[in-house]
Image (cartoon, rainbow, N blue to C red):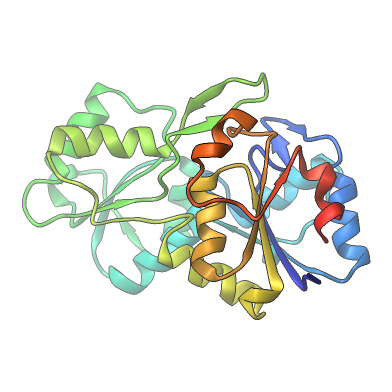
Length: 259
């Protein structure tokens, strides 16, 4: 198969924490040399596309903000379309807050005023914030999760809690599931990936470290898929992987073998 476009996950695929995965720079170079369109797509909702581009540049990887999408950008697009005038109570990072405010959305720090609750990765999440989220969901408040990732890979090889852990905590005390969880592999994320590449999905490949998000995104789009074993998935996980990836790579260093 000759691919014209590739969607690359970031955490666990291109880097782990603050360290690039060996071979990541060379893999990006191989895509550029083949004139393959690139979209870096992360479920980490804490950074703007510009901040992601700066982070990658610090690792020696040149990617433009226009080639980057995230759970935050998908969430911002969704809220701008579905809740443009509603008051949003955010449990999330300052980076996500900046993106929502820059899009002209209205945020409130008073949980009783909330018409929409957005739950996301928040290193300051504590009992008081959980209580406020519970109170925010009283009544007809919409409940939005930025992404489903329960854990994310840390640079030391261990896993740490992700957005999904906070979404589940709030859902548990509120006794209700989110109305929608965005990020990969949601329908919103599929539309974002296809729209960014502007290619026939059958000409594209998705590469990431999670079958339940990255591979599921590709399968939902009709794209080929490859899982790398440099992040949260290891070889022992593959027999039960759903959906099943088309390719299995030790790491992004092996990308050329499927191009």
